[in-house]
Amino acid sequence: MRRQNIFLSPKILSSESKLASMNSTRSRSRPEYIPGHIPDPSYVRILDTTLRDGEQAPGAAMTAEQKLRIARQLAKLGVDVIDAGFPSASQEDFNAVKMIAEEVGKKFDDDEYVPVIVAICRCNEKDIRTAWEAVKEAKRPRLMPFIATSPIHMEYKLRKTKQEVLQIARHMVAFARSLGCRDIQFAAEDAARSDREFLYEIFGDVIKAGATTLGVGDTVGITMPLEFGKLIADIKANTPGIENAIISAHCHNDLGHATANTIEAARAGARQLEVTINGIGERAGNAAFEEVVMALRCRGVHVLGGLYTGINTKEILKTSKMVEEFSGMHLQPHKAIVGDNAFLHESGIHQDGLLKHRATYEILSPEDIGYERSSGANMVLGKLSGRQALKNRLKELGYELKEDEVESVFRNFKAMAEKRKRVTDVDLKALVSDKVSEVEPIWKLGWLQVTCGTLNFSTTSVQLVSIDTSTHVACSVGKGPVDSAYKAVDLIVKEAVKVLEYSLNTVTEGTDAIATVHVVLRKENMNSHTSTLLNGNIIYPTFSGIGKGVDVVVSSVEAYLTALNKMLHFKE
Ligand SMILES: CC(=O)SCCNC(=O)CCNC(=O)[C@H](O)C(C)(C)COP(=O)(O)OP(=O)(O)OC[C@H]1O[C@@H](n2cnc3c(N)ncnc32)[C@H](O)[C@@H]1OP(=O)(O)O
Ligand SMILES: CC(C)C(=O)C(=O)O
Image (cartoon, rainbow, N blue to C red; front, side, top):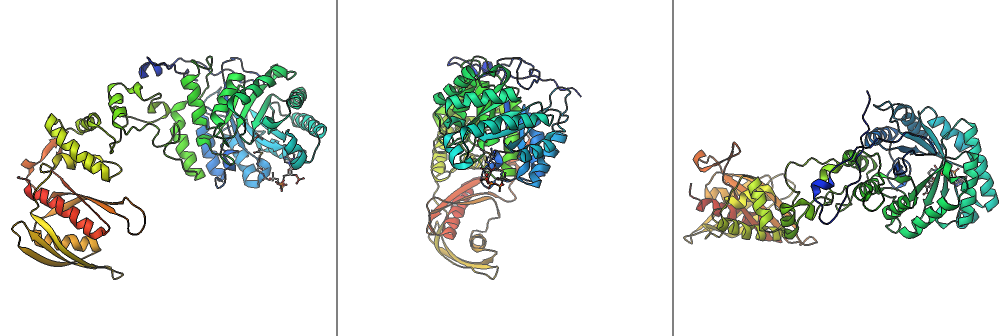
């Protein structure tokens, strides 16, 4: 089956632009794959190294099967080059690269698009042979012999002179070529700290020996964006034979510049960018795939002179989740593009702006990376939210409230949000149905005594004080302290209720932390005429209560009594 290679052009952003115009797309075909040349000068190849440098993140080791699954997904993303691994590292790594080369690298679901599969190797014959054995069955196999070129690496790590390194590089590229490999990426490790003239010389020599791509590594993530861009521009201007090779940028994130350096490299002439999904990689990681690709898409036309990639961005989220799961490298919620909070808005002023026009606070839409969104903006209700967002959510839930009702719900919402991190839809429904917000309690807690332990049951004795000041005592057994306490209360109050939600959060630290308990309940056997029909579903009034204190059982009973009192005041 032939897959149409339609690629989204970069989006134009300006202060007046609307999100809709940002989403406008222009179709472009992926240029034909020629190892040392890209027919369209604006096209930027993406080399994904999640399976190699990404796996170098401490603790991120993946099985061969997991790597194969990720490689399949990388092909769906439309990655140009997959750095599949280091075949000499172990038999498992060899097998993984071979499987990827023979499946993902042979044929995808398209006659034309097949990702290049690359295997990395040190500059010695054994590594190169092993790497070639692993990738040679791919339709587009590539070898990546690398060697460090900086004075510090050559002197202390390799214990070799410049001349020796130069000679090794030249010979090893020629050796790779002699095996039949026509696509060779020579990588200069620690290029960023290397002597410029030496880099021009070694790159010029390996091009002569058959290299088609030159890897420029900011291996220790030390450069500033402008510095790295200048390095790329200098290599482009001074390397003999550079017109026969593509410059590739490989940036680490030690100073948090990896994405910026990579983009700057593209601006300066690099036409292959090396990235990892979620930015995982050795130490502080690598330039993040999703950041680089979305930055090019978002700003490529406007700031970068029309640069574009062949990435199907709608597959980004899925790939990110897969890599997070398989590598065990969990994302911080505020991670750019793929973090859980990347498209969420909590504060009232932002939410109001979004409701009026999404582009006020969204430079990308979540759908661009593969989210499905049914309506409006992604908003979280919390203590910083305002009336507009609250009204909007209530409306989405089917409630049309009058202004004074909104005010009352808003007051209670703020009070609840102060104590809880998030206010959920169930909370909102409870707030709306709490027709009685500040009621005189019909039942108050007198005292409470609980025993619990390892015998699988707990007992509670409770005294409640009625509105008429009479006192009532009951005892009950339950599965745990809260269960026995609620059962004891039920014996006195004598109302059939159903607890819909019980949650307990601590707001301070330590074993004597203040706990906040939130309970939502409804009356059992309620007449259906007291219910509301919402979108065809019967919604019964629900009642909520909050209890707060160092004793979780006492807090639980207080929350329960508050909800019960509201329910008892509610006239059916
Ligand atoms: C910048 C990067 O990210 S490069 C990729 C880094 N990734 C990895 O290292 C992961 C895979 N590595 C491994 O599994 C192991 O290191 C192996 C199997 C490759 C090698 O293991 P060993 O043979 O035990 O060597 P060890 O790792 O201890 O030391 C590396 C050797 O390679 C040499 N070496 C390092 N880089 C190169 C190079 N590019 N070309 C040739 N030799 C090199 C070192 O000088 C050292 O040689 P020495 O033992 O003669 O001093
Ligand atoms: C060897 C190259 C590609 C590398 O991983 C680096 O420089 O960090």
